[in-house]
Structure formats: C-alpha cells, structure tokens
Length: 57
Image 1: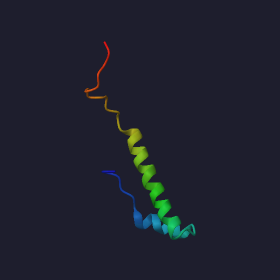
Image 2: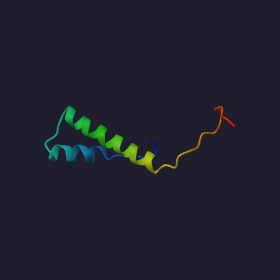
Image 3: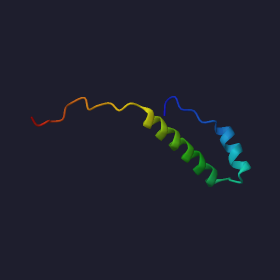
C-alpha cells in the first residue's frame, strides 16, 4: 500500500464518536485500509503478461 495513508488517530477518534471500541475499532481500521488498497488497485493500469507463458499459434 505504498503511497496510501490513513489518518489512524482521526479514524480512531471517529470510531470513538460512533461508539466503537476494542476489536470493532480494529476491524473498522482494517476495512478502511482494505478499501483504500482496493480503490488504488482499481485505478492502477493493468500490466499485460510480460511473456513466459506458452501461447498457441
């Protein structure tokens, strides 16, 4: 997740305001990180296979 940053302190503060604590807060952070990573991957251009696989022809 290079280049992606999550304001952990801000996210934990938001979780506390929502009444979330303990494992639920950890799950919230994990879900946010996974969402950031998925969004970044979706925006990244796909790289075609560089070869090495046998292709029929």
